[in-house]
Image (cartoon, rainbow, N blue to C red):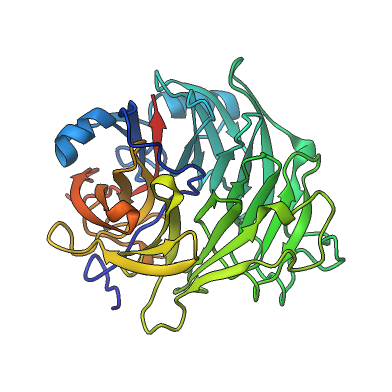
Length: 434
């Protein structure tokens, strides 16, 4: 299947910067939760702004796609705060994560480099930090002590110290790691035309100990970084033949870190790989290149179909790994215990001919998965991969203990310009426990 323009055939999903480091909770008493989704499109024709859409979980359980979300205009208090604290306006909200206790939200702005911290309960912006060229993703550590920022076109890994009790957030100049200049522990160039040609960081994945950050690179290769060192330092290095480029999905499960690689860039339109790394094999002592060796769980390159692996999630009890294919409009399912692909299911159908889902997360009970569906005018990712026809929140019913699923509804959103075009472009998405 090939994806056409403006929503013709199939294109898929993704998520979790990010990145879902948590699987669903047990299926007992239903926990109170909400779903946050980021609209990247600009506010009222300006060059900044965007919006947050927040859906109450109990309403989603009862009403599904008919749920009316709370809308937070990022062109208001957030822009005012950033202008006051940094002198510049935030542009293109991209990915959102929550602090370990779910008390704060962390929102990165990919086009301007801002990172904004929110009181998650009141939605009030508390602090705005300008990290520099770009902030593609800003990922909180599980222990609550820091946030790692992927400064994409700045080719930097940065760290913000965090104290959620006192609302103190500080960009640590002494922690910064230059990914484009200097050498690795083996003496190789960090950015090298053969080994790692483009070291723009995409999505840092932090392990449950809060010590190691797995940093995917746009041009291929990967660094595992001691995220608590000052400056942060590389402890494991991988070249582009070992780990392909542009990964943005990752999840920890059963002692392994799953990392994907994807397409959706002009230099590499189609890519779909999933790797797993044995966490116990890493230490603070630097390893030789490409060790510990990752396991290639799955590669769909050369399968005859264009693919763009973009996000991952573990279903309830960690039994199945879902990997979204943004170009193919499908979710590929891997049995976690064996690392074998056990199926796939399409998200294209009567609800949308071209959903182009991007990022996803799972409900606490594990029975629903939520996915951001891209719009007609995507502001990130190559349009070939990212253009969708039904911008909004997709609601997937999990079936057969995570072996498959069904797209049950789409809660559409709109940001209509003066010419009548819907500019809405959902991207970042996370489930928050209340």
